[in-house]
Image 1 (cartoon, rainbow, N blue to C red):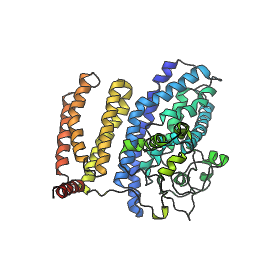
Image 2: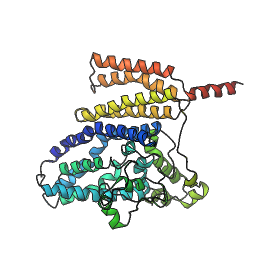
Image 3: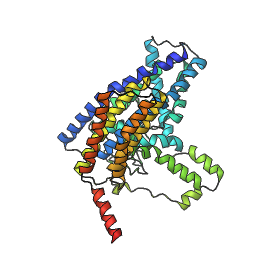
Image 4: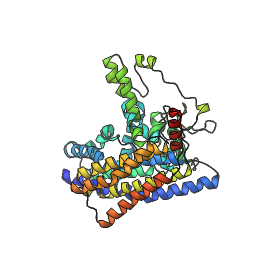
Length: 433
């Protein structure tokens, strides 16, 4: 085995696979939007897509810090527990690792649907009530807490960390294209691989479809272990989760299920229930809590997607603001290895604040305008502080762009008419009367 620190340092090179794929992701999203127009479909809504993409940006930003947990654990296990010395230069090792990874992914994914605390992390990916390529980029920021456990068998067998990280990235990249409604069933391909059809089933909240088709690349695991379900013409898919997110805030998207579990645990009368609720099957609640705080089941025959009225100008403002944060996220992903941990942490906090603010703006909340002002006014102090702490160096042109962005955004904030601001004035007038 090569040295443990060397393997850790090679992590950054594999991260670039995702970085290089970003332009292709958005090219394909653009093509899907054209297909929508050509076929008269409406698979995209701006707020839902921005919420999905914001969750993805936040996941990639925080992942610079959190994914190291899984890497360190894997590399340590490989260094000290590997039963075989598998070579990176052997083709069969790569093929074996690719299949083995998907097998481990199947069980990680399956238990992510079957246990409360694991579902709390994975639920983010399923909260979108639309199904399109932006949904593929809707990823959790907390999956690192337990996800690493499921891949330790690969380390024990002796799969080198570089091979593991590469096949993990390839597995993730493969899953992008299956998040679309524009591709029908693909004949014999459906029997071996995950396809758009059988992955649409996975994202459904219809009872017949729920908790099925867990594979990342191969559908054979579902066929072997009895979790396969074909998409049925007579049962149109209703996308989303049974407890709706009802928010465009990516931070709340990551915390919603945890908050619900914590609330139920706090209300439970028995200490044993307070502890075991986290590891019980998904949806399990203490009997006394369920009796006092029942949760209504959604009637899918009358299902309505979460929607908030928002003017065209306000939507354009949100889109342009998100593009700025997307570019910042790409830059952070490219520079992550060269930045100090403190700089990455500060950048993640800055991005979380901005993406949450955009989410609240899309929700048309009465306090969103104030939060936007606070966010824009905090840009210069935040970047100045980063420079003073030696975390970041900006030249004169960079400062000029930052100042121009903040001023133009403030101007846009004042000029964009919003329903929420009108409603707020109406509420204040009613109170005054």
